[in-house]
Amino acid sequence: MLINLLRLLFIGCALVFIFMLIHAWWHKRRKGELESTPFWPVAGIGFVANFLDTLGVGSFAVKTACYKQFKLIDDRLLPGTLNGQCVLPTVTQSLIFIGAVKVDPLTLISMMAAAAAGAAWGASRVAGFDRQTIRLVMAVSLLVVAGLIFAGLLGLFPLGGEAMGLTGYKLGIALLGNFIFGVLMNVGIGLFAPCMTLVYLLGMNPMAAFPIMMGSTAVLSVFSAGTFIRRGAFDARAVLAVAIFGPIGVVLAAMLVQSMNMEMLKWLVAFVVIYTSWTMYASWRAGRRQPDIPVQAQVQLSEAPR
Image (cartoon, rainbow, N blue to C red; front, side, top):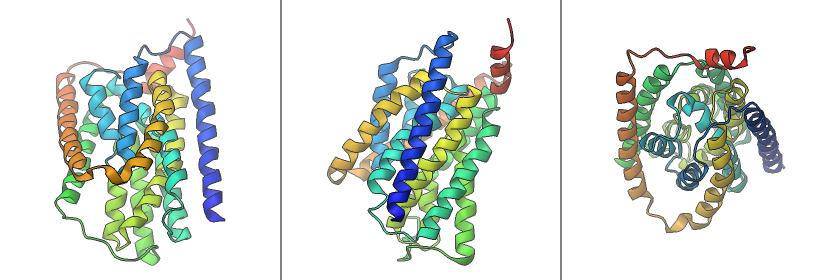
C-alpha cells in the first residue's frame, strides 16, 4: 500500500514539473527569450548521464563536465538547469526501484521529506547567486563528490550493517544530513554519493540507500527545480531535451545493469569530476575582475517595462 502511494506521489511530482516546464518554455519562446542551446547534443549527454546515474555513477558531474567542455550552457544557469534536468529521470528511477528494497517506512518517508525541505530552502537562495559564486561553489562541491567516489572505490567507507531503518539520534542525524544534501543539490552536487555514505556510516544495510536516495531526489528535485524555473534561472531548451531523453537512458540502464563494469566507470567519472572542478576554478579565477549580475537582478531587468 505504501509503495503504491509513493509511486502516486512520484507521478504527481512529475506532472507538476511537466506543467511548470511547458509553461516556462512557452513563456520564454513567446517573449523571444528562449535559449539557443543546441538540442541534440544536450539530449545525447542527458541520455548517457542518466544511464550512468541509474547504475550509481551519478549524472550531475558527467553533465557538468560535458557542458563545460563543449561550452553548451552558461555557468550561471548550471544549478537550475541540472536540477530541472534530473526531475523526470529520477522519478523514473524511483518508479522502477522503490519497491525493490524493503526499508522502514518512517526512515524512508522522513528522509525524503528532509531532502525536499532542504531543496526548497536552498533553491530560493542559490537562484540569486551570480556566475562567479556559482563557479566557486561548484568547484568545491565537485571536489567533495570526487572525494566521496574515491573513498568508496578505495574501500574507506564502513560496510554498513543489517538495519533497514533508523530510530532515535541516528534518525535525527539522517534527517539533518539529508536536509543538507537537499540544499547542496542546488549548487550542483548530487545527493546519491553523500546519502549513500551517510547510510553506511549509520550502520544501515547498503541496499537501503537505493530507495532512500532515489525517492529523496525524485521529490526534492521538483521543489528545487520549481524555484529555479519561477525565477528564470535555468536553460529551458537544455532541460526539455533531458526531460525527454533522460528517462530513456534510465529504462535502458535498468535493463542492462548486470552487464556493466561499474568499478571502471566510477574511476573514470571520479577523474572527470576532478577535471571539471579544476575548469570551474579556472573560470572563476579568469572572471574575478569581471563584474557579474546576480540571477535575480537579471530576471528583474528582463521583466522591466521597455
